Image 1 (tube, rainbow, N blue to C red):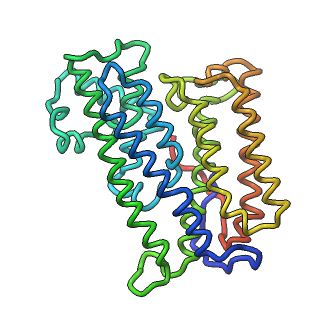
Image 2 (image 1 turned 90 degrees about the horizontal axis):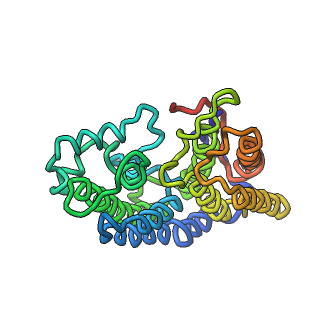
Length: 330
């Protein structure tokens, strides 16, 4: 089931910080530094040669995971988020798109503007995941079309990262000025709080219902190759990075609840992180065994408990009304 925000505007709980303070904490403490770091790591990725790209790929992907739950506003516009991370890919569009580019030696790789117009399935981190790490392919080497393609993808990631940093500067400026004359995006600070809180919910949903559920499949038919970034063995790493990011991102919202509730949620996040640290299953290959499956299900259940506490305790205190709807997607 999916936890979705409604459009109701309810008063903030009396114990919460002022909405503008919550917004400021997110803008100054999380969003702007997060996108600046992503740009820096994307710059390094774009500077790396195709045959020495692996470390920079992981560093840039790590930085993206820090802010990937911020899926509204600039990230949603122009499909930037999907162009960076086209996943789930239930129909194998990324290998198919890249294979077609390679077979045709499409010259778009030599023209950044043209490359920005190709299918999002052929761009972003999952395109590099296939090119650099697919076990059935040789890694790109200089002088080949595959090398030019890998470097074009890295350049495109860098371009999008720079766009996002600039656009989020504008977006967060509007959040800070919520309620000011001429600000039609955020009429009151509470609207900015609700948009920001929605990203927390969406981030949890994605990890629970896709990053963990997809490789689990069913008991009779586990699907380890449906795990996110399994080729580069990032599946557990992405979950751990997302959980760590969401734990930090949740902090300003926890000022809306009693101290013991906030402390309990912080402890719940920490326990999930401890489970992930002890998992030792980077690509979730262990879902094919009962014991391995149980460990991943335990993480999923713990995150669902956090999601439930947010829905029953934090959301009402912030003035956010939540309802359950089916999660879209494959």
